[in-house]
Length: 415
Ligand code: GCU
Image 1 (cartoon, helix red, strand yellow):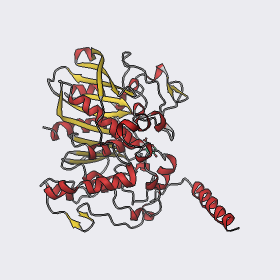
Image 2 (image 1 turned 180 degrees about the vertical axis):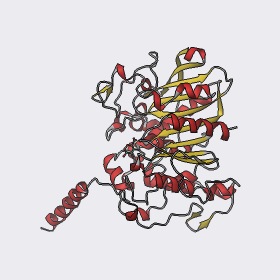
Image 3 (image 1 turned 30 degrees about the horizontal axis):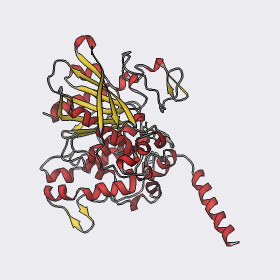
Image 4 (image 1 turned 120 degrees about the vertical axis):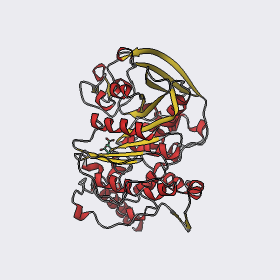
């Protein structure tokens, strides 16, 4: 009988959890009060100098790893980078090369590298794409991605598989020519080459195929971790390409891939600057602010992105030992750009702004400035310098306006 009651209670709470309405709060008056943890207080230790911060920043990385994103492998693998093709594009303004990265014969990833011909050692924007390299440009020599993609809008994608018409469908998200004209390069690979974006994606990705080589069990890390790891491996490739300035690689990402870019930037300090484009919950937005997407919602919809432990903080966000401003603080002292869109309230623009504003405590240890004590700016009015923020008009996307700001940021902050 007792067992029955226990089973009943368990099923009931499980069903209740599933039934919690998928309705988000968009009412500021219902956000509730919260206090943010201080990035400079680590348990009983109070950090007062840059040297102390650098010595102890692992405290926060470990907490993010054990509560949210999972561990990242420490072992280095044999990575074989092979140049598949190379040609001039954009009327000779750029050279496009396709590389294949092979990890122990078990995982392969295809990387597109587009560099300005006029620059000897180019700064580059490095980021993952959602639905295949072929979506960034109509160039026929870019191999069609043949694994699962999250896109499913016919005729370009059918049953989550890319179709020939998907070439260039997301060219506006990459603005390749604008980037080249500004003297920057573009490097990208599909996130699905590291882990397909669904609950069983790990079975076919680096977490399973490289488990023994990397010495990590699949459940010890997450899809976010697999994508962040992929970003660092693309960085390894970039470091070996003569025409790239190894000290000027900017990691960027939109939305879920912005979350991954932030996690990559926090762990891999070779990234010279970091851009989060509408990364929202689990990215730049504060988890304690109950507005738009919440821990409950994200961990129910995308259980593979984070550790199961993160889901246990739903409805008790205040008990999380950190919040996302601390992830941003881990990017110090490098330039960081956080961007929101007004039409993307789901990502909680205000929560993204507030966490960006909170970064400056750590930057101050380096004598560097943050956003200062400012209010949220109006639409299309970027604020800050080394740490920048904008909220633009329009929907959830990364568009020409965003790229204009990122190029300006790259030029000003990486020189
Ligand atoms: C969903 C998800 C977000 C994510 C976004 C995206 O909306 O809830 O957390 O950022 O997809 O990746 O586009």
